[in-house]
Image 1 (cartoon, rainbow, N blue to C red):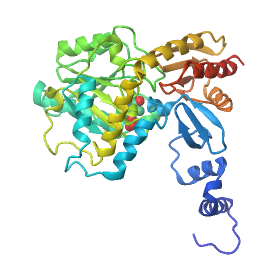
Image 2 (image 1 turned 135 degrees about the vertical axis):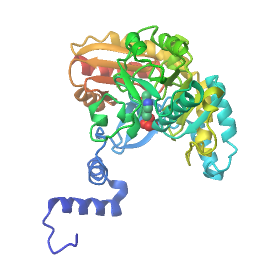
Image 3 (image 1 turned 90 degrees about the horizontal axis):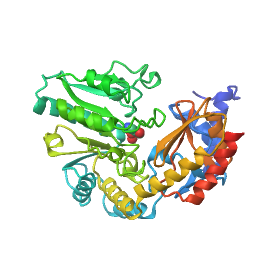
Image 4 (image 1 turned 180 degrees about the horizontal axis):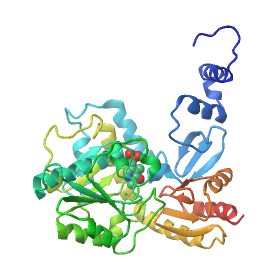
Length: 424
Ligand SMILES: *Cc1c(COP(=O)(O)O)cnc(C)c1O
């Protein structure tokens, strides 16, 4: 809109002031101004706590006002190795300096080695690399359908996939279509057919939902976004048995819970259960870069032929270098073992907190949910004031998921603050 004389509209003035601050004083922008820029020019699909990150290292984050925080969100379990791990940063920088993205029309020198190392890590035959978690979930869905038509002999167009109530598998239209969360799906239909949802943790419901056209059961071994829901013991083995009995693929979404987070290589390892397909993401990118994958055997992933599926950036040299570096760090620093030990200590200390608000504390390894009898957001805001960052999920649950490299001393530091806020 052309400016005519005096600015009369407050909103226009604010926008003008922000833009001139951005142009002339970018390094001096305040937290309020950053929030305003984001509000004015960014779609409002998130409601962030008012913290503007400037620097991160290990378990710590510093905001632009110089406040230091212990980060207990870890970017939803992406920061397993800790922020800016030197070996992962080095892998990223070394590669970026000499090798750009060639697309998948050519190979790069990092792709083969990473593919082999990831398959080996998962003890599976093959890997299909993508970028984001949602893309990997979509890839697993396509794999299951392809297998259903080509191998199981399901009539074309009839494949069914069973999912769980309370699931979170990402944000594409197909995926939100089988979500049970109104906020995630309302307003985005029509949706992809072919999905049936059953209560999480309920063997009988699952058994009854299987039909001759069922090609896969897609589940999270622990439901993270639903509020750290740990299934009953034996549930994963029961899924495995039903899949074996009825010739159905078992697909574990380990994007949030895999790669060491729950004290095991995979959350499925807790019951020593091996799914047909692993879906990986988040921590696989070392906290620096989007890397995701579907990992399985030749009988499923081997069905793809050239041109059936792809991604320009999938398996790019930087992604592969970063993924390799994460796997190396995972072994060298014993991340799963540390998560198990630190998680047990943290859980014990949390249970000692005597708070009238706590309904339940649950989780595995360093993925812990504290369910309150009221809204969790004010507690997260109070913790932020004390230097501990975390985020509520489903209104009344505080998710506690620090980087897996956290020390006992740092846990004690956190416990002191959590206790203070929850006992207040
Ligand atoms: C985060 C997450 C996804 C989606 O990953 P994006 O990278 O955000 O697309 C899928 N499944 C689970 C279990 C997740 O936690």
